[in-house]
Image (cartoon, rainbow, N blue to C red; front, side):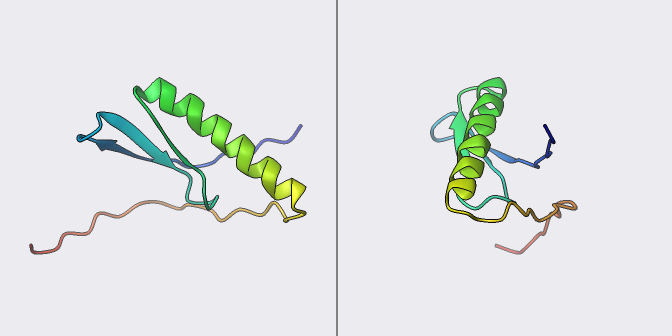
Length: 76
């Protein structure tokens, strides 16, 4: 079975104490976890669910490629 690697963006939400992750290549693929390990498990599950839904809707499984991140500083 072919494999696809996805890039997850991970943030920590101090208000909830949860790690929040999203997959930019898959709209709607986001989740949270109490630990980074739980977040990884949840991200795997949400990716699989989004891919299943795309396949069920006959959508082509094409993904953008994340090439990096940038930090941008602005005056507040």
